Image: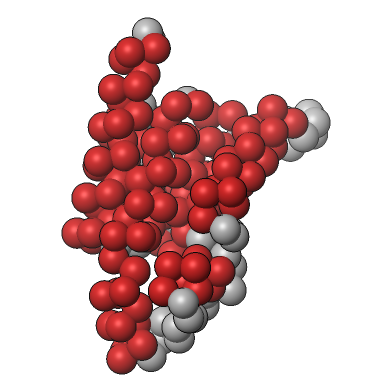
Length: 160
């Protein structure tokens, strides 16, 4: 793939993930669906399995941002270790790519957990299980979370 094509696909990924996040939510699924539709590797089972990782995992807020988690999962679909290779090392190359993604995300968004991003995006954290607070969060974070999902999708597509 030429540098120009790579750049075009990465920009397409940004737009797709941004739009998916605004329309459907569930940041890890938005990232993974975008990667599947632009460069492949990701299966529907992987997208389905990521559903519970949204909102820092189970909407708890305390875990890693779902967009970042989706990005790490996408990298692993190509570079990760499968079950048949459990005994054959650690696949350090995948960890290196994952670490680069985490550092880039941290620099861009000022943290890696859902609650850190909530605070950075809105000035406060929310109980995502409280309907009123979730509704407020949904209004306040709208384009910011979409941008985070879109950037992760773009970065992952550039790597893959």
